[in-house]
Image 1 (cartoon, helix red, strand yellow):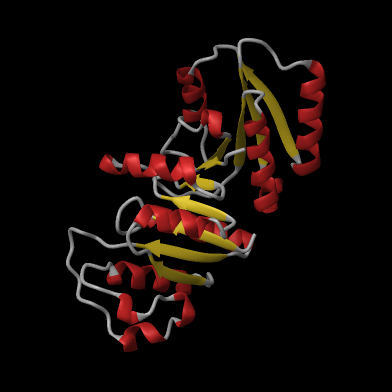
Image 2 (cartoon, helix red, strand yellow):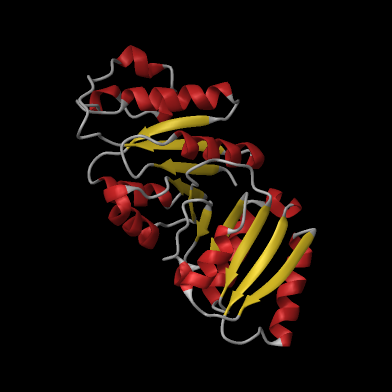
Length: 252
């Protein structure tokens, strides 16, 4: 993996989202690009050419900047990444913001977004449904990842998400992996054998669990008991978002 986007569902990233993005960038040795856009509630003066010049080509031209651009957040992001030795850049997203973020995702390996809060949820839903790269929803508090939980319903999108996660972040292969099957019946033996074989090729420690009660509440209860865990799901299960955990979503 080479390029990670950090996108905010608001004008500035939360500290936990930046911390989590830096964590993934560090373990994968990837460049981190912070995507910023206009804060309509805070007026900030236009930045000068001198202040922008040191950042190189990854900054948009100073002439394109207008009032209300979150310059302080952009600078804080760059300083935070620099202090941690993370290769980073910032990019200002012009209107229409969503369309431009989606266009940027086309050439990114992974997108990280803030955990949903308040009235930003519709923006996040549109982003998740149309993103052109896998998306991770950052947890509200950043912790290291000790376990990967793959939510599996037997669909092609669930398997695709499993593959995409390990292809992008093979460094997580040293963590424990759990496939949690959601269904009213057990996984057929041949299918379970294939799943176990896939897990063993990519993870040192793994297990497969079936939740017989095929409800969102049962799965949610199971996930809430997990700590320091990344949750992986395909598009059929992407309506389940748990702000306590990082959630990896991709579309088949």
